Length: 178
Image (cartoon, rainbow, N blue to C red; front, side, top):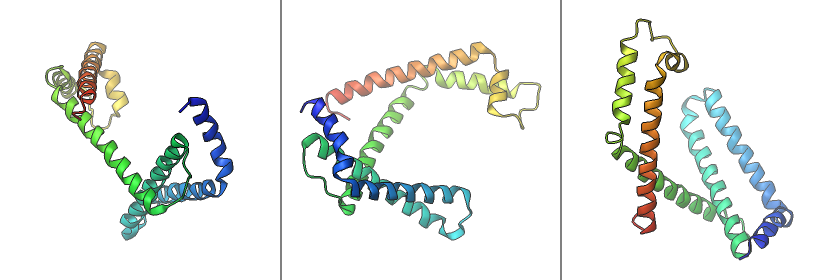
């Protein structure tokens, strides 16, 4: 499929399916309002229920976005099915979590060989041995007190860790091993 056709279909979709976009807008607004109230207002014993409702609405929205993508790319008829959208959103969430967990595991394997752990221990020892009281200092204030060479060494180790993990992840993905 040509990219020009995909872009034109994407531009036409909100006009052709305006009722669905109003429903999506209302779902998104409800999700934002529930999340905002969940974090700002003490809802007591209803906090778990509001978290579950917010998560379910978010998964439905993810599923709707996946169905829209399928509609646009394969030129199919778009239908709003809440149950199918929830299932599709859950599948997408699980696939995303699979790749995040795999990336975290790969990165954690290389924390010691790339020197990230040693650099963090150097910074920890430096902070412990500081003459000032670090109990009430913010992270920004503490990082301003750490010598630049320790900060640069830590940043280089983290970059090396990410680079090695990315190369291995791409290697495994190219063979379908992830």
